[in-house]
Length: 362
Image 1 (cartoon, rainbow, N blue to C red):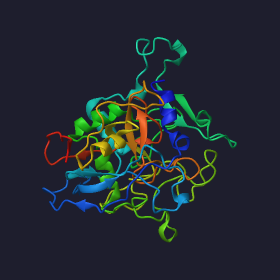
Image 2 (cartoon, one colour; image 1 turned 60 degrees about the vertical axis):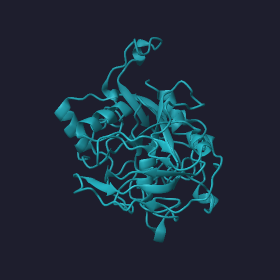
Image 3 (tube, one colour; image 1 turned 60 degrees about the horizontal axis):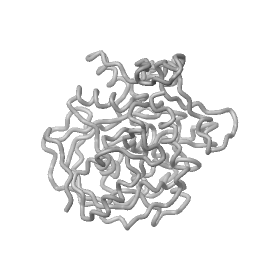
């Protein structure tokens, strides 16, 4: 329901498209020298912006570090973004609850689908709910994602795994089961907006240039876990070697160079850009440095051309070397706009001015 098939494909595309992207070498990041325009809004940090090489490449890294590089993350191209404020963590359950209490907002997952929306669907399928990861009790072929994803009646941000679950005692955990319209409603209420894909990547890199991860080139520097990812046999059992099985509270792992937490692993995060497989290739053909890119004018995924998808970034607690390595900085995810899951959240940004950016080419 509401893009269920689309969202399933989105999260398994990494294994389907296991090709190495076309790429050029990473050039140094050139941060803007402009200081923050004032004190940071509560819960946010200043990201200076600047010019950087955007995308992902296996060049210069061991192939076992990037087992599932996707062909939508290249070619590497130069981008410039203006400075902005960014939430230090994904929006948490307690933050989202304040919004709901103040506005009475009802999320997409809490709304019952109508016959007008889905005229061919059986009446018994028209139930409020969302997509939930449900690990099988035995090994399965990684080509059959239906083995670990299902649409669950009653799953929503208050009940991430279904009616039997809740978020009591989990106020500091990232809110999940959030569709794109839900993020827009929250951002408008908070006086913020969703980050562009370019802003997210610049912020995630934390001032580093061309590194494999948001913290550097080694997955576990000094044996230390740096992000909430999957250990063990996927999708059967997360061994929890990093201290967490499933979602973790925000700030459970070290911040990056800009003081941002969970920019890799834990939960995927929505960006404002429409998703197109060939968007980076289009920018490369134009040439030069792209200023403040807002993404393509319309979405297009050749695998599912009728689905409207936005970009996801950062990977999640389900990412692993066997199946999906999207915790690698520069790699991309995607999702149908009206579908949430129990490993998908968001964070917001705020521009020093409220005027919308424009995309130009040099």
